[in-house]
Length: 105
Length: 105
DNA sequence: CTTATATGATACCGTTTGGTTTCATGTCAA
DNA sequence: TTGACATGAAACCAAACGGTATCATATAAG
Image (cartoon, rainbow over the protein chains, first blue to last red):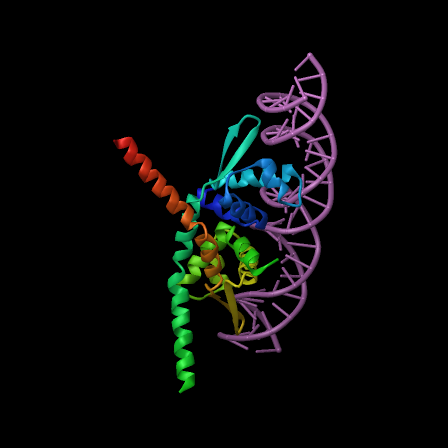
């Protein structure tokens, strides 16, 4: 699997997307992240691992804690991928606009 | 599940992302799409269904054929979601630039 | 030293996913 | 009408997923 595959897969789960938003507010230990969700710590730890596989989260061990940090760069790949379709929805909006205008005549 | 969940889930599979790129070139029947992939037609039909659930593909029946058309609007939601993190990678780039400059002194 | 804490690792489980094969149905064509 | 063809639908299967409980380990604290 490519890196891009890992990133898209990481984003597929709503819990993982929430974790990214949480880490956008600041670094968090595994326990701190887990306390925000209605599931056990191991479950959250697994999600963090998937995010790590996608390069979206990096971990720094500090004593017995592990600090999780958002690493947003791979999201740029997603943005680039999606951007390839922007021309299409622009076209659609233009077509819709035109249709509305002609219908309006 | 929200629409956004469906869209992110639809994008999680590389075959489905390829299908979207293919449909960006033009409308295709189920068979035409399936012929481009190394899997059976029912498998591709299932992927098209998932894409349809995410609102990314619409279908128009014409005779015994079913024309699949790209519907890119939901991708705008993805773009918006990802855009929330752009400030972070801008910050990172700025930090990196600064570090390089100070190291350079 | 002993104890509490933060975490990783492992085993396990039910559901979903991504694929297949097979069959039924509707439509086009000879 | 008869046959070929495009598709949907259903049953099935192995693997992946998202979760749990449990245990081992390393570090912090009393």
